[in-house]
Length: 308
Image 1: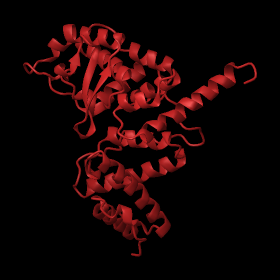
Image 2: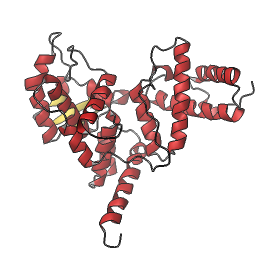
Image 3: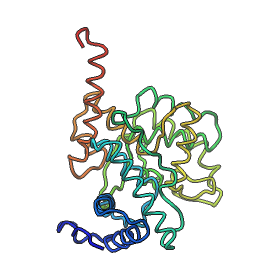
Image 4: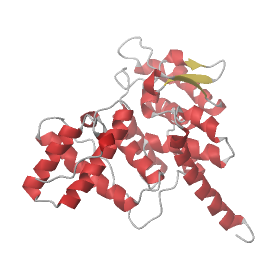
């Protein structure tokens, strides 16, 4: 099989042997053209490079991580058609890993194809956020927990891993901040805001004790079994409350992180402040969100200015 040589800058990719074995299988089983194989290689190498920057191997990625990756692609103005093709490639790759007994489940199973022929997806509107945050009602421990988690996620823009791994000791209610340990072990302080703090204190007082069935734990948001919640479980909780709220669009934890950044920028926040709050080491990563904010401002101008 003739295959174009990979770029020199990608030569140290840990996933390269696995990617090349998969491409060999495609060539032998499906007889794909060199151009198609080259496109698949680019898609898989791009994912692998991004994952390795997060400290993850390509065969260890879960659905939420892949959802975040695809959302960043779309926000950086990569077309829906290109992203849809990349997702198709990823599905085939992870199904190959299952057949090869390298992974037990398909992390792409819950991912939805981007809709073609439409503009780039906009950030969740503030009214949609209000509907989502209002969805968990009642005083059951799970409703109180989910309400607090959604409020905190939108108030702080935490990554889902940072959220589900929070301990009680990381919350300073007196100062109204959360101490977050982000990527690379870097710590940052993020303000909670009064609304999120009220719901958090209400959950800790009324809901959390009922969930600690496994005994004492410092996990802030325990699962129904009293243990640390998984990222996948929280994703399912968001999907549940999305349906309850009547929001007809797919949401993920990253959607609220995205909304946090975009809404701050819409209301005049400085880009570097948003960078610090999100825990981005590179300002260019934060600048992805300015595309959405600028598009929103243009739309508002067109709809409300007398000469728009």
